[in-house]
Length: 116
View 1 (cartoon, rainbow, N blue to C red):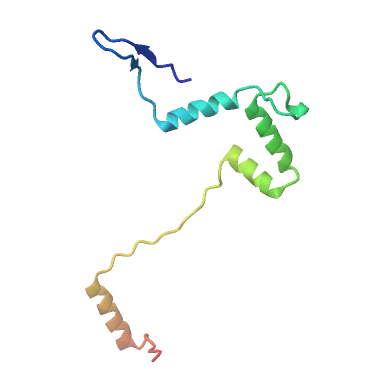
View 2 (tube, rainbow, N blue to C red; view 1 turned 135 degrees about the vertical axis):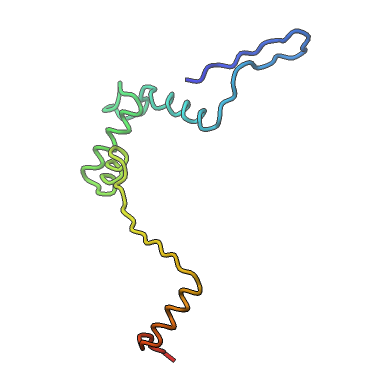
């Protein structure tokens, strides 16, 4: 949790001055999300009473995933992570002079077909 910033009156100062460190928006959001997610569930569904909000959300998503394929995919992606995707790439280094030379050689061999 984020520590509270203290307000103090420095010697000779008229106003209170906050003492403590500044927090980024991401740190504040993470802290707030953690506090809300770990709070006790306070909704209307009695099957989740006594649970933390995060546990109720996970259980709800897991139950939905048994009947809905998109919910199942989302649940598995959230718990196990997205499957890795393989991308093949080829690196070709060619100068303009080399490219034109290759075209000229193919043209002499009759490999290039002129569509015009």
